[in-house]
Image (cartoon, rainbow, N blue to C red; front, side):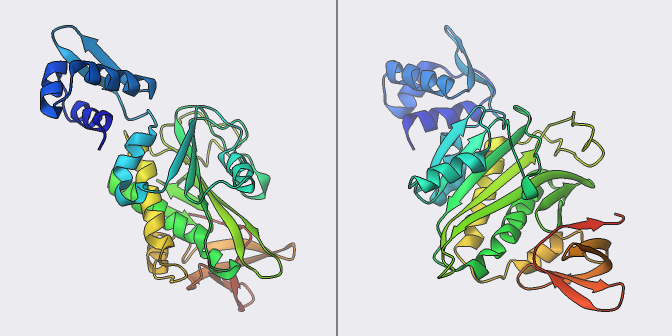
Length: 318
């Protein structure tokens, strides 16, 4: 690790002041080098108190998104990742699509504290207020075809659920196909977009967009009864890094769909009565399972079994 990373770890692991001389002695550098590293951390957004004859103490860390800290938590997966952080942006997916078109490398990760035009499936708005959530998009360039790519959204949903459960101790749920629920409220959404070669069916790139409400309390009236937040004191850096790590754990094994059993575990759909549309005709049925490609198996009201691979469903009652 760099000197700055080492100092950050020291500050995070100590609640009291640490003297600059003690840090300099431990890492065999000058006090000037310590001072420069502290100033760099401050520029990264960390709030660090500096007191003469006492030293340095970190005052705030969990809500400061830091590429260095994310890479620390990513471990081996940090080697090739390229992180760009924005205080405010129209949409992380929109920005990353533009960068992908211009040749951005695989594993580019765009993160924002605020989106002015965050959106989900069907162009719907995704409420993205400043500082109370985390919004990010990851660029992948797989060597498999579009058939295997249909698993990407399911894979990402599993990654998010595993991370939330590991950090909160509570079990979230997946509402097919791209919404994450927590305490019966939607707290996260996924938007997967791809550029493909129509003739060969091969993929140019895939962008995975994720938005998570962490401490958001006030929602627009139209979603106030459906939207919620994690409501936990969770480090954004840990959460982002955990999700990305979980994605890569499964991504490098695709098209193997072994994670589908985990998807079924987190699904809140099985056994639920739903409405769904086929060719703009609304139908009613009961969800009986999830197939090995993430498709929703539904027993329709007329007794037929159908498997939904795209579209939107409405749960009639939770």
